[in-house]
Length: 319
Image (cartoon, rainbow, N blue to C red; front, side, top):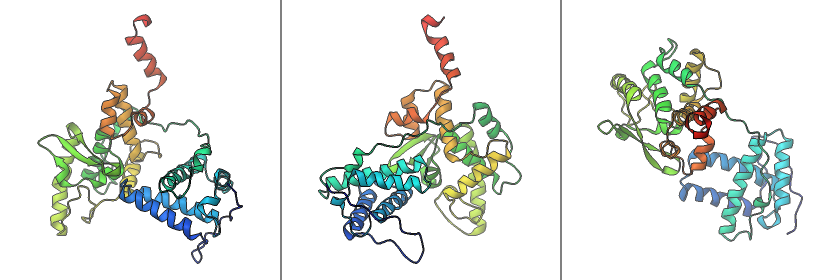
């Protein structure tokens, strides 16, 4: 397969968009349509893929077709990303998008093979994000919501559901009133790819949700608004993932936690703390909505101290 020297990145200006070969542009558009229709990809995933693939198309330029690009071309593109200051994580994400694209192109008969499979993923640093300890989480949830909070009842319910149910941010804001089954003590959650699962609604999370819903009804009556979305703002409109992230960070910092706390941190803490307290890994997988157990294994973590404690307590030759 013959390689061509692709065009360099065009300057990012609002007036002009880099020229792309029509075949490449058409292929990317159809691939994104398939992600939307067949795999039910979320809007966030579609935006991310569209951005990565548009950048690759602009790198190829107006004269390069799919048959002209090989693994050397892809390596050059990734090298260009790195030279422009992108991190290894960002470069790896771009490569993952290209692998998915070329896999689809091969399935559709546009290319004979997937050249992205011949490109090695950049070696990423083995760094696990810090998870708040059990003591830190209990201290946070047992303390009063700061006076600066605009909607204390709602904000407490947000924390209790993110940590108590292991929800993603997008899953939290997607909950509707009809998804709450109080009689059964569960919430129906719509996860990635429109997959559904039930999570328990008990204890502190159930109490916080009951208190919030009473205030929620008052606000909607005063504002003369109606929405099925569970979480709303003070104006009665549905809450966004960006707002949830801001709320979580502000309250966590006010309660003495590090500034890198975000909604996914609470989900990570949910899995990690359940595992450290002896929960079955497959049960955690089900609660988190992970398709593969390997994802759960990477997602949860135990400190070496905890591992040694379990070994000393359970292994017959350790006593």
